[in-house]
Image (cartoon, rainbow, N blue to C red; front, side, top):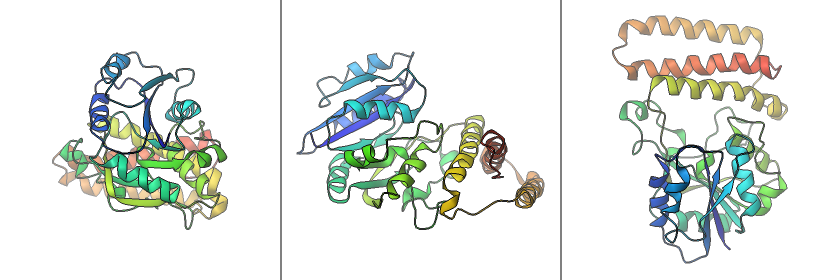
Length: 291
């Protein structure tokens, strides 16, 4: 088996058909399989998946309900995967036409790869125009240790031996488990290669509260990333830096309030405050200062 496509799922019955339809329309001359890793869904997900039996090669559902989290669900699926390489997708996204053959060829050549991200097809325009993704044109490097890069978990493909070498995804990361995964693979000496010739259409959160919650989670687990990798040269943060950052953020927000006319204007501030509050919680939770 050349490639195992792994999709972690939790109550995604309303979106997974889009992803499975996109996969069913892929063409590739090499053998591949699709593994749905069910993280404890209660919304009829399996009924949707069953409609694609016979249309997707080697389609299987594995039970990953023992522990919540995408990292755990991905690790469970890898245990039964037959492919020499692994490609990870998300159940609320959509791979582009030709994605399978491009990613399959890339991971055969480079061992560890990631493709582009597009946020405009599946996301509300008012959200996508504010949060246009940095991985639209290259790998993500913001906040990474020197010479390191990372990519969204739904955009990567990797040789099975590398996944096994690093012990899979770290299940203690509720958020940023994909960033941690990319960095620890690079610590083995493997390089993450960017694949510009294909993309994944990513579905961003559709309202302010969902964006705030996501930003909060990212901020919280950003602290755990810092705790794990600060020795590699991540910028240090003192109490003074944290207080200065909070003060400047509050001042900019107060100045911007009179000019806010829509939720689009509010979204960047909603995200910034959510991430900042998450960092405060993370600093207390993981006993590491990173405000």
